[in-house]
Each structure stands twice: as C-alpha cells, then as structure tokens.
Image (cartoon, rainbow, N blue to C red; front, side):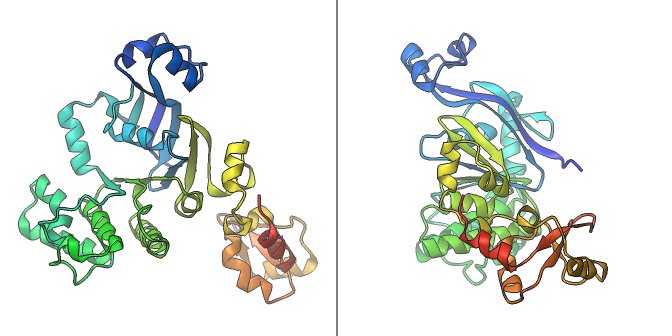
Amino acid sequence: MNKEQKITCKNIWKLFGPDEKRIIKGLDKNLSIKEVQEKTGHVVAVKDVSFSIQKGETFVVMGLSGSGKSTLVRCISRLIEPTTGTVKMDDVDVTKMSGRDLLELRRNKMSMVFQHFGLFPHRTVIENIGYGLEVRGTKKDLRLKKSMEVLKMVGLDGWQNNYPRELSGGMQQRVGLARALAVDPEILIFDEPFSALDPLIRREMQDELLKIQEKLQRTMVFITHDFLEAIKMGDHIAIMKDGEISQIGTPEEIVSNPKDQYVKDFCEDVPKYKVLSAGKVMRKECCAETKKQFEKKENCIEDNSKIETLIDQLSDRDQAYPVICSTSGKLLGEIDRSIVMQSMKSKV
C-alpha cells in the first residue's frame, strides 16, 4: 500500500550568483559544476534534485561538506530560495507561497532544530521551550502546560527554571528539541543537530529522538555527514555529492547494493548485521523441521527483523528458525546461527 506523500521536491536547482534566474534559463544542464562556474561565474549548489518524503517517516539527507545537503533542505523551507523547481507539502506549492503564508507555515506546520542551539540566554528553560507558542499567541497557562509536557518528554523534568548557561551541551540540545516539539509541528527539520555533541551524548540524543519519533510519528528531515548516524536514524537516505543525489533508498538497500563507488566508500566500514534484516539474508529453502515449527507457529521470525536484534536468540541454539512475512504471515525461508555468524563477519 502506498503511503501518503508529505513533501515532494521536483527538479530543484540552486545557483548562487548575481543573475541566477537568467543563467538557469539558458544553462546546458549537462555541464559539470566546475564548467558552469567557469562559463557563468555562478556556483551550482543543488543540481536538478527530485524526491518524495512519506508522511511520518524520517528522511535523511547526507553527504560530505559542500555536497549541497544543507542548501537543499533550506530550499524545502525556503530559508534559501530555490532558483527553479517546486516544493510541495500536502500538494500545496511552497515555492509559490506569499511571505505571509510562508510565515504561517513556519509557525504552525514546521519546526527546525540546528547544530547550534540558538537558545535565549536571558530566558529560563521553560520560557525557551514555550517561545514558539508565545509567538503564535498562545495563552500563558496553555503555553506552560504544553511546555511542561514536552520538557518531560525530552527528559528535562526538574530543570524548567534553570538558564541555558547552567546546562550541558546535550541538555541544551534537548531544550532545542523541546522548543521544536512544543508547537506540535507536522514536519521537523534537523540540520546536523547532534554533530557538536560528545559521542556518548550524541548516541543518547539519537536514541531519545528515535523514541519520540516512535511515539509521535512526525515527518522528519534529518541532515548529517555521518553515515552511521544516517542508517540509525533514517527510514530512507538520500546521499548527495556535488549538488546531486547519488542514491536514495532504505539503509538496507544502500548498504546491500551501493550504486557507485562514492556510496560504496560510505558503506565499507558498516557491518552488514547492523543494517540487514532476516528476509535479506535468509535461506529460501526450508528443512522439514522448520516447516513443522511454522505450522505450529513456533519460533517464527518476521522478515523485517534486524540481524543485530537476533544475535542472542540464534547464536545459542544450533537450529533453523522460520522466517515469515511481517504482513501476510507467509513462510518465506529459514535462518540459523551460521547465516547470522556469516553476516557478522561481512562488510560491504
């Protein structure tokens, strides 16, 4: 069943230069970024990018510095005006919105969380969290109630009357996340939100956001340059290079089938078992014992179960387990300790 498309970007270009609108009209689209700059004096930051984001998913845009990922995502919210192309949210063309409509979109439908927290130093934690509601004109008692709800959701209960300077970096980022969530947005945009944090705090924040997303099911766009973060956070990942998308897919699709050397270089140090599912590595032929287990509905493993979560279960016993379709319950194949051990040894 096709999921509802929340955001659709079509043929997005972004040129930086004094006459971008005129240049794009006569531009040979086959020229490289370097050739465009030499011929026109304009820099191509985003080159003819198209993709769709499903409602309720986390869509990761990743790439190295200068790949165009932040510029592309800023084009979605029109913090940067695309040179050409369309951005639609729920079939409404964002690129044609008036300034007033765009302001309403940012206040009521979309929130953004950046690497640098941007907290008000003279406001307490609870006042920072409620700022978006204050701008919206929400009454003080309702603002406080909602702010306390999200304060607890991000694990800052008891810190509401402290000031940002009294908080660690990780706690400050929690305040930034809470401020974004307080306005109950349909769309959340994250621009490398955890990259300035220490590794342990970063993992903690990733886990926190995954828990919140599991509960709220918002549409999230997440920018990162870290591939391990991308495969952990993303339902789908778009990998960018030189303003273009090299590959879009699920973490499993990208790791198991990188389309070019650039993508493969990102994948090479990722252990397959962290990404691949039982359905991807299973043996399609089943032995008689596996079929018996399936008939009795014993020890069945769903095809979308990640290998990483099955290690303890499968490594203790020398037997095969039935792999079933997560939606239909149909028997698809079997998986055993040897398959799991092989996937743990494998890299792309």
